[in-house]
Length: 237
Image 1 (tube, rainbow, N blue to C red):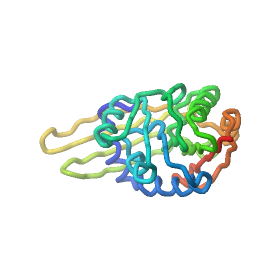
Image 2: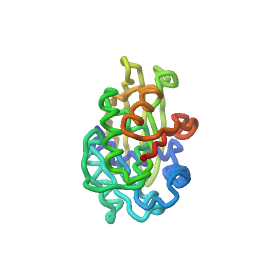
Image 3: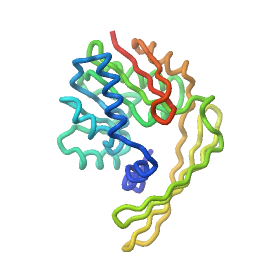
């Protein structure tokens, strides 16, 4: 789970790597509105610091977020004081509310550790949909598209602070283990180093589609978006 150290630099490092939260939110909204033209409410699950949510707030009348990491919840609440951001686990949550759209971005659904948990996640999403609502999931990599042993490195400087990120990812059974090292330096505090380890499931496309259908959602997979991971869209009856 993302800690306070990473929360502080999360958006900076990923935006420096070329991630455009605004463009992703606009494109996803365009696709969703084709399926549900009158959609006016959205729930972003595993919303992190609210980087996508702040853009969704400009496209929908009512938005909310839910996130397991409390440091990220606090960051999202600071950034979006008028948006409800809840602490919760995507595998089992109940907000006593329904939305026209439920999103799960940035491969976060891969933190479900088994196919049974994947089914629980999609069932939770479906419970929070209005009739003909849409679930949009940016998946993690499939087993055949995952690059075992992948190394990534980036350095960025902004507002007097330099951040370096180096990651190594390796396959562990039906998941990948990603070890990430960060060095953060500024004039006042000097340099500090911390690490994070993430285990992210490599579900097959068929496993995702089965979980969507088990939740009662008609599912479509769109290859290409989100750095090649693609996009799943599920529509409720």
